[in-house]
Amino acid sequence: MGGGNGQKSRMARERNMEKAKGAKGSQLETNKKAMNIQAPKGVTLCLNKVILDISTGCRGIQAMEASNKKAVNRDAITEEVAAAFAESNVIPERYYRPDEVNAGIVVGYDDDEAYELPVVDMGRLLDPELAGAEIAKLGSACRDWGFFQLVSHGIDEQVVNEMKDSTARFFSLPLESKKTVAVRENGIEGFGHHYSRVSGKLDWAESVILVLFLILFQVQVAVDLNSDALDKFSVEMTSLTMRIVGFMAADLGVEQEALVRAFRDSRQNMLLHHYPPCRLPDKVIGITPHTDGLSLTVLLQVDDTPGLQIKKDGRWFPVRPRQGTFIINVANILEVLTNGAYRSVEHRVLIHARKSRTTVVMFHDAHIDGMVQPIQEVLKHNGAEARYRSIEKLEYMKGHFSCKVCMQTFMCTTSEVKCREHAEAKHPKTDVYQCFPQLKK
Image 1 (cartoon, rainbow, N blue to C red):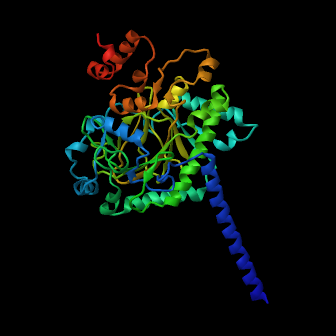
Image 2 (cartoon, one colour; image 1 turned 90 degrees about the horizontal axis):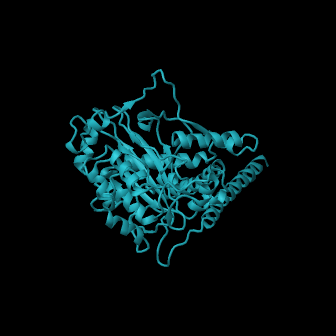
Image 3 (tube, rainbow, N blue to C red; image 1 turned 90 degrees about the vertical axis):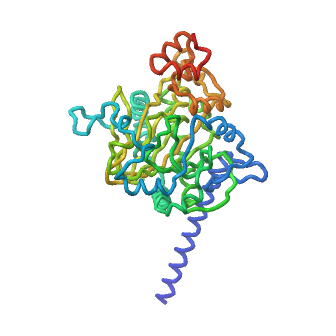
């Protein structure tokens, strides 16, 4: 009789587990429907898919790629590259960049100046009694640093660990397996190097770029990336982003909807980065100094290897990896939406001599009715004039990839004389006039 009771108990547990699985899946489908994701007839959504081929539903991305052929490219990872990553005793010329690595002052952990990247607690943001003070911390971080670490984020630990494991497994595959999703010539999506610009120099890294969420793709082959993990993580990151944006709106003094609507139904890009160790770390760079082109960036670090550095007041500040956190940063479009209240700041990645570094980065897009421009409610609340011009989203993306001047110069809305003076103070005249022929004297 005891054995019968044990069997009934075990069967009950199994039924409950199945119910829980069904509930989780049902909730995931509900979340997708709530985000209003729809695909044209005959086209497969890339959410829950590993993207490999652009479908006819992606004319906007195809047009952007066509316009970027000379300005930005992604090189394939070859056998020779893989061998260089593995040995790293001799640095190939295209990776040799000591001047860039040593450019600028790096603030050390042991310097007299104590610093810590701001920490924002989601639990406190959600607590009515503590939210006011925590929202102020969030706003201060976005204004002063453009970056913060998010703790108590509420994301299911299993979802996070599955994403970490899936990413680590992919980069541990043989090169031939990873090349089944290699980036195509003049393309953006797939496995390869990170972006290389007109200098022809390459970053010491291998990457997978996945364009998700309302960008549609036809799947051709499967690789060792857990599609279920990608799916769950993508949905969780969208939900987290919308929560953060809502609190940003409170800090800016506007209704939530004023900022949230800019992110709603916008695309989401995922970048998986792997930075191999290098025996000569002062000769190579993981990622070139840059600002992010979309709106809000969420970074999950798979391991505890340092490398990320943020530029503040003309100096580089290394970021200590912190277990159980996401690193959030303001990207260019969010700076424009907030009319410069929040800052999109330059950052880079340096290489470790002995340990590899792996990250999962989610880039969230935003726009106002297809335009990149300051939010009217923000302007009205501050009684300010727009510091940035209004520009169509596709035109903005073309400029982000092809223009060699900073975003603040590219989006300048002041008089042509002041815009030229600002641009020429920060950039070579040839670069300024290439992007703005109308400013030529």
